[in-house]
Length: 629
Image (tube, rainbow, N blue to C red; front, side):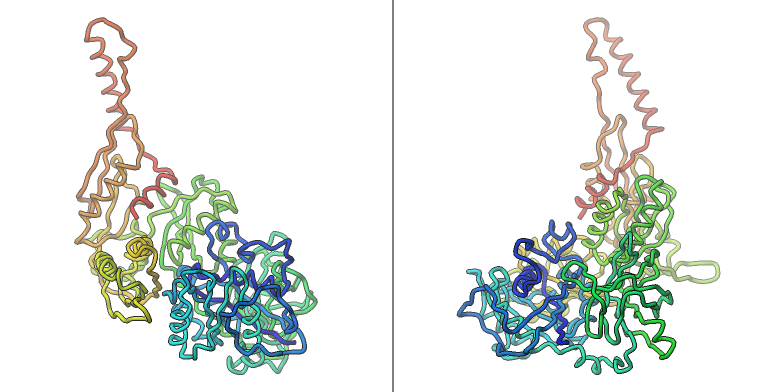
């Protein structure tokens, strides 16, 4: 059986999903009447936003004699397009996300394949995420096929982009392929190149130090979903052996066992088959109703094989490291169990999501959750609302701080994930915060604005180098708290959309930080607390109360807005009360009648101010976050 397993990796919006559509058409995997744009983006959120959030596998059948209806173009260059095989070839493609928040999705897909199409937009050239994804593919020792996309556009810089890719990969320009994912030009040649250059699974087995001659089942779980009828459905890459329906299976890392209720492939919908064999990508329906028992990165083997052989787990991939933390509370406390169930099932499909129970005096029971970035947090919030019908309250996003707290027996270390848990300054000996190492690719004309932005975010420029043309690569270090919230939007704004960024965590450094608390009508709102640099705390405090004054609705009594550090108020604003005309219905008479009504109104407002409180709805809180950022 001839099998080629490969992925498409690229910067966001460079045409991965569109190219996958052309592959589906060229191989006849999807009928024309059923075809739609971004076919592999199954989630409605992906289609609405126009980005890929989850990787999606699909199995295609390709034959060298296949005649595609796609037109040819004299500018298209293909590589080794001679007759390759007499038999058809199974192509297992995994479409991957491009946004920096979903790099972990890409790394999991790369562990299940032998080759990668590195796609670059001819109108934009190499971008930051292009470099980041290329590095991930090189770590897995995959065969890289460089491809320039969107050559049909008038603004396409074909020669320059080919030169960039050639230099980046250290290959001749003749090995860089040209395609138009929109109209299909060059797709046939690209498929032939994939078949020729991507190693077969058996060729990579020895290189990866995986024993395959003993026939023992070794299946790597690279993703999973939950089905109400079939339980956990594990997406697997079979590295050795085979599996059939009805066989008893064991998860080597988790230690659980299950029966294979169904095995199948993605075409692209799930389709049952009799057997999944070595080299294939497919799924196994386990019937397990407890999602926590199936882990991404685990190895599946058969009970019969384990009884006869010593089976070692496959080397998976590193656990994802959440970088943004926020507390989640259901609007209605009766929905707490439903929220826990929804998070558990969501984690099955998104293993980078982290959560654990948490309790708040004001908001009741909830969960502290960790995300890979702000977009990831936003996607999780929307999915919970759409798929489970839950309204959530989020706390202010934060990063993880390492705090050394003073104590009677000496200092103690602890990790603080939310501002509300940060001790007062007099209790803290030192604070360390996470830093990142990042790269920004930008046209040289925006370097001045970029330098200003980096300085404002406490970043340090480490190195500046040039790519072909007038574009520069700016390497920098910065505190993570300054990057996660709105840095990417600010970068796109100052560069008119031309700059791109990628980053990775680079360790912890000491910092002089304090907790900024917000009081609304004398009540501290823990959701609005944040950790800020001491030197900028007064400026930030004035900005926060000013934002609140603009967003919070008026009440029948005046609302005091205060920002405090170490219980000392450093900024204040007041939202004036509604003023109802209580004398409007009077006509004529003595002025004392009006004065009595005004005094009565004044006393009523005073009572309201003493007893009243201000509730911040989830919608208002989200407005505050967006305005703040």
